[in-house]
Length: 268
Image (cartoon, rainbow, N blue to C red; front, side, top):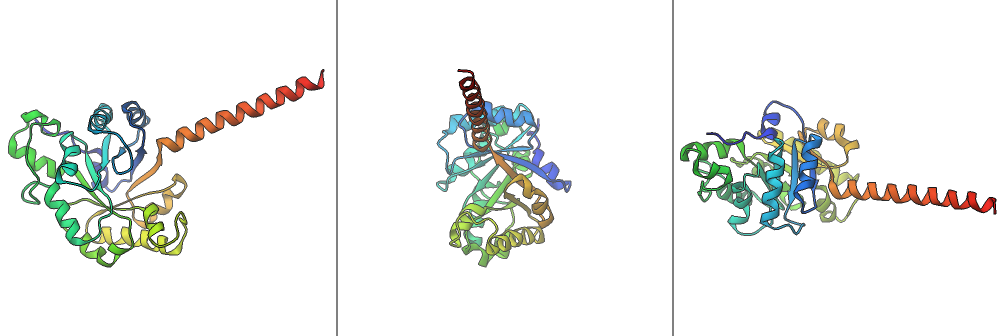
C-alpha cells in the first residue's frame, strides 16, 4: 500500500505551474467546491482562522475525495502543531515568519523523518493508512510525497536568504507580500519597489538552490509571477469570491428596484 501521491509535487517536478486558492471558511463543503472547480491545491489556514482540528480533518477529506492537495498553514507553536496536519494526511504544511537558517533547520528536523530529520513517528493515522503502510515505506513516502513550505514575509530574513534556501529537507520558499509590506513600512502598497525587489529575489534564490518558489497575488499578475520564476501561485480566497458575489447581487437588486420605483412613479 502506498500514500496518495502529491498532485502539487508531481506538477512542480514536471516544471508545471500549480494553482492554489485560500480557504478561510471553516467548512468542508467550501474546500470540496474549490476542489471540484479544479484547483490543484486548497490552502487551509490556522494562523489567522479559527477552525479546530476536526474541521481541518474534514476539509482534508473533502479535498482528497477529488484528488486535490491540501496545504495547512500552521500556527507557530509546539512540534505537534507542525505534524498534526501531516498525520491527518494534509499534503503539505506552511510555516509562517521563518526568520533564519537555524529556524529553517529546526522546522526540517521536526517535520521530516530520517534521514532528513527526526519527526516524531506514529504511523497509525490517516497518512500512514492507519498502520497499513509498511513502516519504512511510510517514512520514505512521507518524505517524498508530502511538502514543507517556509514563508518569507519579513525583511529581516532576507539577510540570510541564501543560507535559508540552502537548508536541505524542505520544498518551497513562499513570499508573503502582506506582512512584508507592513514590515517595510508600506502596508498594502503591492507595487512598492522594495516589495517587488524582494519578491523577485525570493524566486531567484529559491530556484538557485533547488527549491520551488511560491507566492500569492491577484490572478491578473499570474504571468508576471511565472516570469519571475514562481511555479506555485495562490490566486484568490473564498471570502473574496463570496463577498464580491453578494455585493454584485445586492447592487443589481438595488438598481433594478430603483428603476422599477422610478418607472412606477411616472404613471401615478
